[in-house]
Length: 158
Image: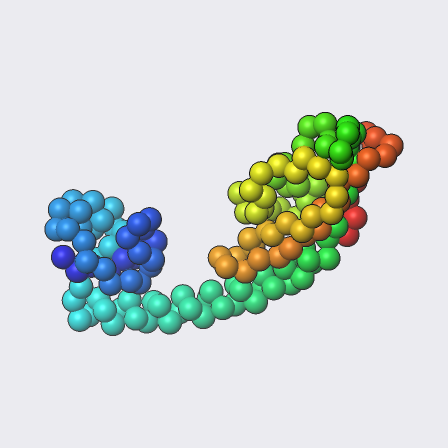
C-alpha cells in the first residue's frame, strides 16, 4: 500500500515521503492515527505544497540556528577536578556536567545533543560536538584541569 506520511515516523520515513507499507500497518495504524494518508492525485498536490512551505520554514530555522552555532563555537568550559597519577581525575566530566555549565551561560541544550560518547576521565583539552539543528553542529572546547576547587567545581568562560 502506498501512503504519504504526514509526520515523521521512525523506521518508515519523514514527513511528505511517499512510502510502501503493508496494508494492515497502513490501514490499522498509520491512517487512523493521522500519521499518513492514502496516495491520490489531490493528496499528492496538497503534500507537494506543504513540502514547499516546510522547506522554506526549515531554511529560515536553519539560518536562525547559525547564530547559536557561532556563539557555541566561541564557548570554552573549564572544569576543575582533583587528579591522581597519570592525569586521571577523580570522578569524571559527563554530558550532564557540560549541560549544566552551558545552562549557566544561558544556553538551553539537551544533554542528548552533546556528542560525548563517554565521560571525560583525564586532564586535558577536548573539543566536543553539539548537535544544534539536524546535521548542523557546533563545537565547544572543554578544559579539565587541577587547581583550587571552586564552590561548584566548574567555571565557565565564553
